[in-house]
Length: 474
Ligand SMILES: Cc1ncc(COP(=O)(O)O)c(C=O)c1O
Image (cartoon, rainbow, N blue to C red):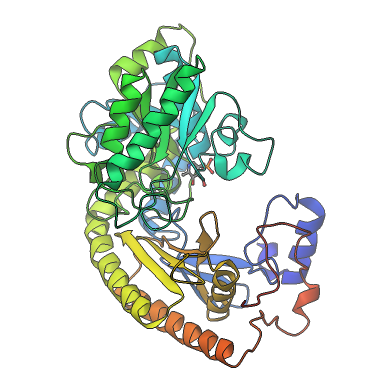
């Protein structure tokens, strides 16, 4: 608890000395020290309240008492690995199976989304006997070496693309090659995947899997055209590969209409593997991979044990069960639909008012606001987005940007986010955009104003194309 009383500058200094600078802070020019969370709010060391619009891990709300209590009670009794019989793990698998199509009936428990995707890759390779993977451009699937290799979001800045990885265009109907005016963007984008598969096969490569987020979030809150994933699955399966749905950011009722985002494709659409993380444990490290009997049997046939020291332990499963209970008792999926529709509608009204807003898209509490410099080219308004997010933070609202141009405002708040919260954010956004427009008209420079003395607190990290510390409008 001593850390709570430590001055922010001291914490920052310790962090700089003891942690790698690869572990970045939000708002590096003036980081926030958070010492407490409750519901959709975070509190800094001075007791200031921030509205959290981005934490999709604290799914049912920061420190939800039911989840905290479940972990505490189980911790008092037992926590051990899954080699002993215990009811929590089977109860949890049972409850998860009730949310999924019946074909997805075998569960593996792990500690992180990365572990879940890495295991999905192993299973796909084992089942198909193939090695290669098709992914969407700008995707991110985790921090393990195997997943950096299938994450264009990362590997484009590193050693480049491996020969076993094939990248298909992002099905982005706002900015991609096939847009809202295309007669059949779902087919056109799925044909791109087909083409990627054929080119790989011509080189003698064999496809083990297609990995995609059911709604690409890291790539900028993309809503693929309806029917796209079903057609992709056909192409992939025809090539002998499996369809892996990464639900790590978008599962567990966030999208409102359905519990899982892949269900937007219709009842008949069933991935071969679904990976879960983040929201599943409300902040406790839990993850899961669900698959079919056939895929699992092929993995089991190797005879090699799958052992994960912490995966599926009684505490993690108690936490996972509590999250499912809260989602149900507080009807948070329906709540996400209601609040999300309200937020979407009000953000769309802002689009009519502010030309910098090029597109507003989303479903439930998964919403993106695409900021542009000009209507014709839809050039990403990267610096303006960073500036806006920084101004929102000055107003105690935490929002982030993503997408290849880092110009998409990402709304993915805890599911208890309210209509009042939505109203508040939209009003502040409106004020700041109006002020920005005023500054541009008067040719004033947009520049983040550091609190007095603050620039010394955290000078921006050295040259990084993704980081801006000067915000100038063209
Ligand atoms: C879509 C997606 N998949 C996988 C991961 C990896 O999850 P974790 O950080 O829990 O390993 C992330 C994390 O940001 C993610 O956003």
